[in-house]
Image: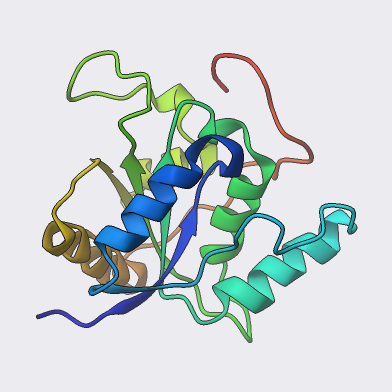
Length: 177
């Protein structure tokens, strides 16, 4: 059995809370979740304070970030900030592996493809450079554990891409490109 990784789960809180709950319950024997729950962080705080709390209180001990991708995940500033913080190497926070999982709620064009313009742009950039991978939803925790372990190994072999401009606010519209 592969080691249990400390996993930060990034997702659209309003739309995909149930999917996150199912993911964590399904994988409770193979991961240690480090995620932010609804109302954990006061939304009235300054933007930089929120970013710092996410980085220092939730991402610091995680080794892999899993992005659960639903129909509006790409629009969320917090998802962008979480991805950006997790792939940035700092003195106190080592960078994490990264992967995306397409949720059943994602509007598929067909059963095996996703629209690159409707996943978080920073995740897309890291898929393009080989730092991250994207998968369709699975109910097999052993398969998911393998994906997470591969992301953990990739973080030391591949270079991440954190060049996409950081979201200042949530986005809207059907896609980012």
